[in-house]
Image: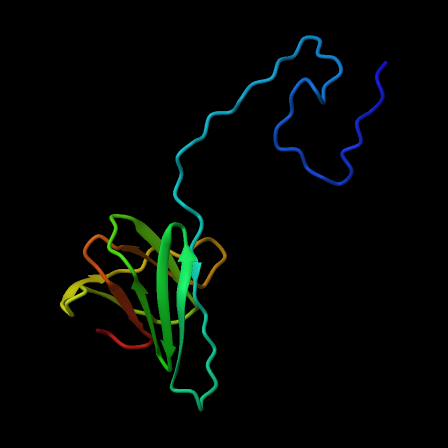
Length: 144
């Protein structure tokens, strides 16, 4: 019998015949991916000191997109550096939020409705498609 291969505390996602000494009555099978709703979301929960009018963070890389984010008292703005036909899920903390998409030339493109919150979550989730939008503005506690 061969010596055991010490994997330590590592998890091995792929197992092949190098790690398996003997296979009797079994076979290896690759599982096929299933398309499901994306569970990842860009979660924003800024907590500004009252003395700060706003805080901006630029160059945030998220799933092949680059964003600039500005948080102000009662408002969050997320701007994409390029227009792409891709969706981004943006999760905001508990509360009443609205959302409006804006084009690069300053035109209002659309108002967004929040998606149902994930189970056991009080977050508000919006799905933003950046094809014709340059930024999305999220005012808190106010209708647009």
